[in-house]
Image 1 (cartoon, rainbow, N blue to C red):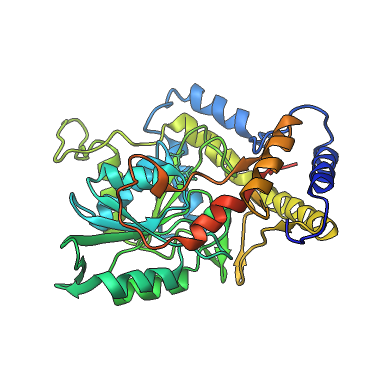
Image 2: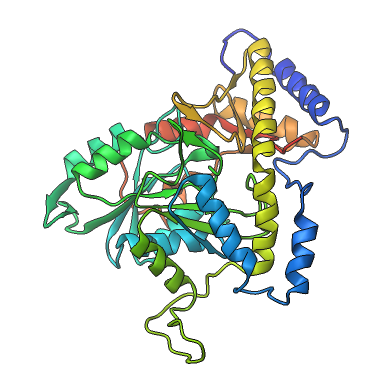
Length: 388
Ligand SMILES: *Cc1c(COP(=O)(O)O)cnc(C)c1O
């Protein structure tokens, strides 16, 4: 916590009292739980009655159209989960075996796993403190040192490998500096895929996260701002890519009234109609969720000001969905004391993900100094953020 001479124990106690007051309960308070207060049951029963519960059905088409309209993307293709969406989006961006994909070490493991599923390797570049998303400055620094543009693509001069894509992530729903990232990637001719899994409802200068790059990805996992149980979405403005996305995620079956022909190795990644029915109802509630989350974030900010504790605010020019609120502690020991005290009193809090470059399967990957990543890893803690 920010100021040298104050009682962190008293701050933590005040925090626990505050959260209990906000959620009006003496029971366990989770980090994030879903809310079903709209037409979820009605649409689910309708999907069951229609017998179309699987990967074909009206709710899938409707959910895709609704998501495209909401985000402003020309096309939206629904998938079984966000990780599958990331996998296919990277393939469609042109990522191939033995290539490299630049991303951040401060992310959920699915970002890196999707890169690995393509047979490619992640390269870790630092984040900005203000966004906790990929830093355009760090990206430019890395590419200026290690990359050269040849034959319309970027190549790593040290490894000789092609840099197939750049995959920034919008951390906890706070938009990364996409203008800066796009500028650097255009200069080096690197396609951008956005991991907007956490950022449904977040915009930067009025533009929805996931619509800046060639492709973007959303997740509707149970812990996200809205849920389909499990689910994801690929966003793009490119008609050809959208068609390929649908083809690849539906086992690459050629459309035909009765013939059963597949023309490449595809994936069974299509979102079932049952899940899409839930999604249509949840998306109807999203504006209300966003409003309530913004109000909760304001209350946390007020508490932070009164108690001299840093609470993360949305970056400049951004409108964040405030999916998970963040408290910034003074350092590792203060962080751990806070985690122990809050969780010990059944108020769930969680440190940021162990950064990817420290995990056994990604330890060997190339990286820059990652100073801000290490800084964030010692200080960032997520606090209860369910819609009230
Ligand atoms: C949730 C999440 C994903 C993956 O989504 P699933 O639907 O759980 O597969 C990917 N990246 C990030 C940053 C996420 O938070």
